[in-house]
Image (cartoon, one colour):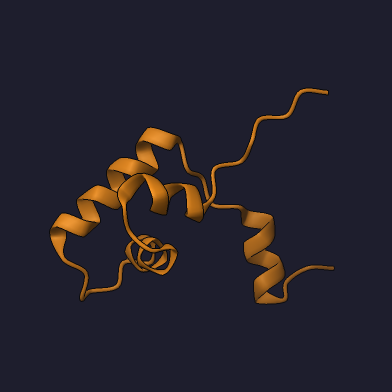
Length: 65
């Protein structure tokens, strides 16, 4: 089987040159983030093809069965 590696917040952070928490803050639309940083994170996210892992999000929220 040939699986593609899932792009993570860590990958986006490394590409954008910011911390993982900063990527999370940008993706969750925190208001106090500089526009320049937002642009770097969104550009890195698009370049790498980042997509949120919905299963992980559900596990974290306690919505798993």
